[in-house]
Image (tube, rainbow over all chains, first blue to last red; front, side, top):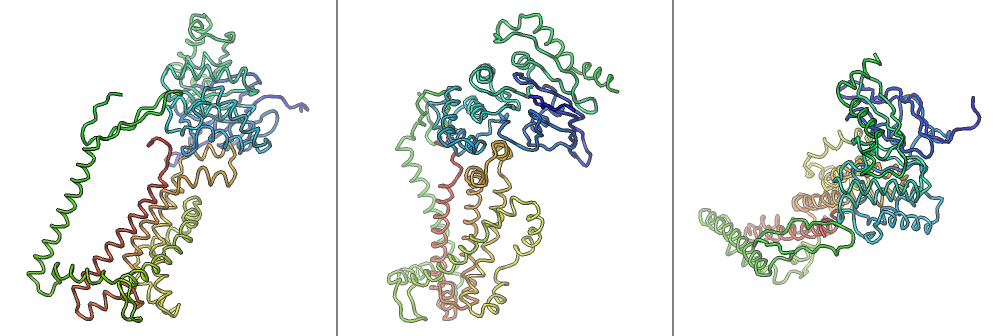
Amino acid sequence: MSAEPRRALEVRGAWKSFVHDGRAQAVLRGIDLTVEPGELVSLIGHSGCGKSTLIRALGGLVKLDGGTIRLDGALVTGPGPDRAMVFQNYSLLPRLSLVNNVRAAVRSARPDKSRAAADDAAERYLTAVGLWDAKDKKPGQVSGGMQQRAAVARAFAVEPRVLLADEPFGALDALTRARLQAQLIELWTSESDTEIVVMVTHGIDEAILLSDRIVVMGNPPGPSVVDVIPVELARPRDRVSVIDDPHYREVQERLLHLLTAEGLADANGRAA
Amino acid sequence: MSLQIAEEVRPAVPPVEEVTSPPPVAPALPEVSRLRQGAASAGWAVAGAAGFVALWALAASHNPKLPAPGDTFTVLKELLSDPFYDNGPDDKGVGLLVWATLLRVFKGWTLATLVGVPLGLLVGTSRRAWQALNPVIQVLRPVSPLAWFPILAFALGQSELASVWTVFVIALWPTVLNTAAGAAAVPADQRDVARVFRFGRVAYLRHVLIPNVLPFTVTGLRLSMGIGWIVIVAVEMLGGTSGIGRQIWTWYNALDLSKVAAGIIIVGVVGLVLDLLLLRLAKAVALDDGSAA
């Protein structure tokens, strides 16, 4: 076989079932997916399609029943410092100040770093998301948007190869979400060495605005991956003007079609 | 902020937003209304106590064998006027008796804490430990601690130790069960964070487990202390070790019922003080996420 391992995040034949009411439900049904360095890939689909399970598997929080996940050729068997996660509900530790949340994560995830280096990383990324002035506040003292910015800073401060985000902006209001989306792209493209971002989203427009490719996932019993749609819009993308781009419209229509009932029925029909 | 605060309404959690603004300050309750609230609650407390004493007096007037409130309070004053005299093992002031009883409870309770907290953590974090221990706990928990006393007294050969271990046996369960509940209730997202960022044992204990478990454990300790204090009085009556419980029994044998009633009041007040102390501890360790600032 090939000698040189590819620098990429590779999912091969991933299967995962959960038992529900005594019945096994296959949530991931033989997923193959490769994410190249420099790519931002979104997972989109209705609830129950397994997008959260897939991202948790990538993070090493869920063990696959079958198949493999490799990062740069190395088998993923559990959480690791090469992959950091942003969760939907911020998930900051409530007793620690924002800066201590970031520091605790970096010190634990990166024992190779000196304490000073870990603290530097915490300062750098909290500053990057505009939270250095609020660094001593507890999570409960700040808004949801600020909590999620701290959580994003925490993930980037670990300086992972891959950032995994499970509906990172789902709980935020539209204005806050827009600002955080911009910050995420900024951190990914220029502030950090993080190359790969995989993000779960519910939002069609969010997916198009941010992604290089969109993985449309379907519910059982159809195939897990219904379609993979490339988004060929030049970066940086302007959220106001980009929606006038004909390609944007095209992708949007395709997504809408796939995510409505008839689209999924078509996909299931093809699979059967 | 120009909020109109109604007399008795505390402001809700203050709105928090934005980085640079100063921390929002909840408008203070007007001094007058706070005073009035305090006075009202004290007034009701007095009314309740007066009602209780009235009922007691009524009952005593119908049954002359019952100690009357007046006699009881006179005796209580006498007992408290010289609480620390010591005329040998059979004649001590109530202060010394209460102290002896307190020491016994503290010993049993401390043992229960030392065993109960680790056991609770184990049961709360390991499904196998839970499956193994749950049946034992469920059978032993409802057993009256007094049923333990004969075995312990016989096995240990002396009442003093047996009293301490009886308190231990009964004080163990609330601490174990509450600690286990706390350990099992660590939010899944905090566990995920600990896994993703690969928290070591120390970081997990310090940042995740202890902050979440501590409030539960302290509630358990409070319940344990309460039940230990209830039980020790009966244990002393049964075991004959010197203390306020034994003294109440002695007074009863001398048919000095006013003293028995006074002893009950002392036991009640000490129990209340113990509970208030632990309640204060509970408030001190309540999860401080800054939102109540």
